[in-house]
Length: 289
Image 1 (cartoon, rainbow, N blue to C red):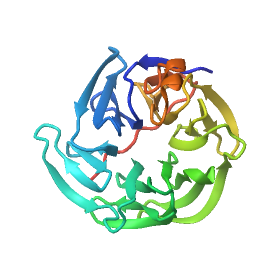
Image 2 (tube, one colour):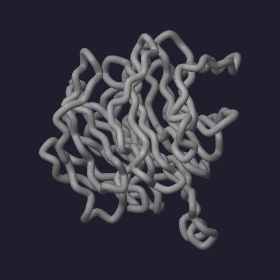
Image 3 (cartoon, rainbow, N blue to C red):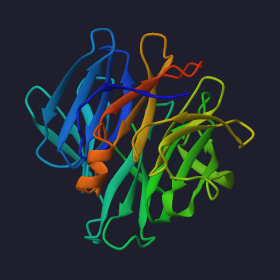
Image 4 (cartoon, one colour):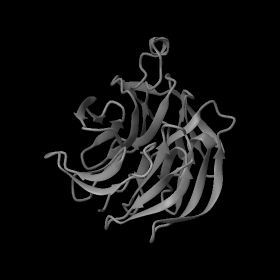
């Protein structure tokens, strides 16, 4: 199957995509472009919203507004007034790390992880922010957090430390928001790309965007790659099911670190792509804090 370009937005580094059923829009961030984007699949219209800093991931709040993970902190953000309330600073003692990939669990907590963008050292972490805005560390010794997503029932958390070239699974305690029993779910060591952002479908499959791999793949519940979506640009970054029936897979892409020759060869880099893969997704839960 092949993904088709639906919006030629030329993001510097599109990421963190999700479907918001409350407004019927696909939302994502252009991290390096310092903007939030939205797309209405019913009208093919789009909008971008300038942000003061890099937004690495974000989610709608149940009470309205957004929870936003900037590079160095997490805030509650009011899009109307542009005001923000600090939730937590992220690793202020380490100037090399920043927040990266995140997603809400089925109970509405935000799980978000970091990366060392200077050296790639495994000295970052994954944190969980609960509805009372308390913050806990879930995973430590992380180089580049990606692929955070949850099984339809919410009892399994999937995660990738991208340089390891594998997606791991944890048992996830839905009452406490804690992880245990880490195991390898799927190896990407024979894949053309690295595991980047992920989402799940209603059948328990994990869909992963392969950074520098020209594709998105589905990892079945048994851990084997059973479906491939070809993407006509080098750097897919993240994916999410959207549309009223959650039957369209939307894919963000990047132009980051692509030279002029690469962009001339693939001018649609940084665009938003979509495909109907024959399965349905699962709605993310808004942040409950």
